[in-house]
Amino acid sequence: QVHLVESGGGSVQAGGSLKLSCVASGSTTRTMCLGWFRQAPGKAREGVASIATNGGITHYATSVRGRFTISQDNDNAKKTLSLQMNNLQPDDTGLYYCAARTGPCGGSFALRDWHFQHWGQGTQVTVSS
Image (cartoon, rainbow, N blue to C red; front, side, top):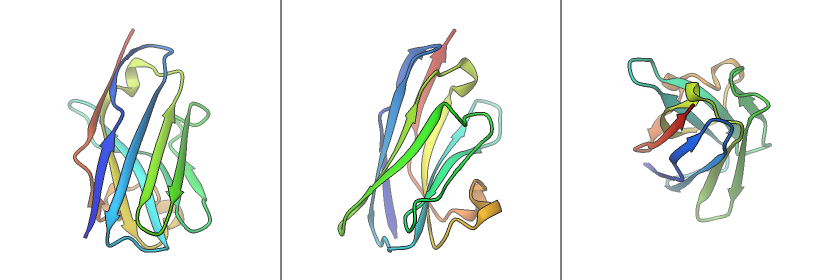
């Protein structure tokens, strides 16, 4: 089992920045896909960004490309995932989840929530206009 703990959510005004972090521990492996998803009230959960732990290939949703940056910091004991969010807009408001998949990101599946096996509890991001 992979245990994921997010931190760094909060409230900002439009145009502001936040950085989310997620620590993955437990049964992590060298080849994993780590991702961020979000869910706004009344909407379906959507993929924001993902990164392959082995090789660092990234995937971004069109709506965040150029504003958000996903990164990772791995050591033998745990993996740390970050999401730097700049120029935040009200549409970015939602509950942000860290997710992990044991195995590769899988190209076209890299931002599909059903592709990920492990989930954190979520951290709230609120952007006001």
